[in-house]
Image (cartoon, rainbow, N blue to C red; front, side, top):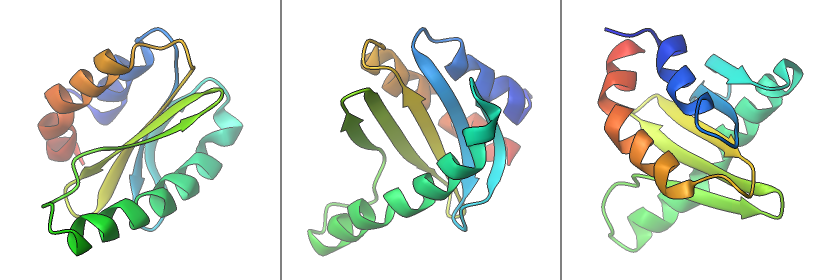
Length: 117
């Protein structure tokens, strides 16, 4: 079974992906890979707070569990995906990145990531 580091490398190998992180619900980074390592802890804190509102909306609207949330910025998207009950996968990419490939790669590797935590 691949390690978390190897699984995150799958994402950072996608052209335009600047960071891939596994973050606990408490905001602490479990594992991360980023172009600028200094930003990893900051990104972890943002990812953990960024999922709260979409999950609350999902419950209120009775839409079932949240599978992915995307926040799009001028410089590119941040894709967040719950991993089990205790973690979040956060992918930060450039505006020119292939969002479909990122989302597919999340779905394809989500179970392996959950098993590796």
